[in-house]
Length: 146
Image (cartoon, rainbow, N blue to C red):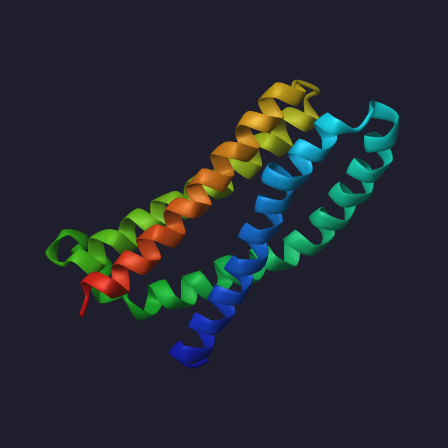
């Protein structure tokens, strides 16, 4: 697969992933506060079920294409502090791993029955912040490399 195609797939997946998180945290999070619990519960379950189905494929796309792109830049990752691009790419990968770990933490807390609405909200905001950090780093990688 060509670098350009991997890059396009990675960007499209990232748009879907970040857009979903943005909707859930910024838009739906406020709507839930305005509606009663009876109105929100079925909608929240439906959105959650659909998001989980779609996001599994989106995550596979984003991380799969990301691994392909990282492989393309493996020479820079061998010594990440040697260039601005390599350093920013390394930071971007660290944040991507943090997003993955955060979702794992959500799954673990849900499975063990230790998830609270406040904890879930904090984790959602943390994941959104990490994702936005990845976008800023991605833009900086190509801005600083010229």
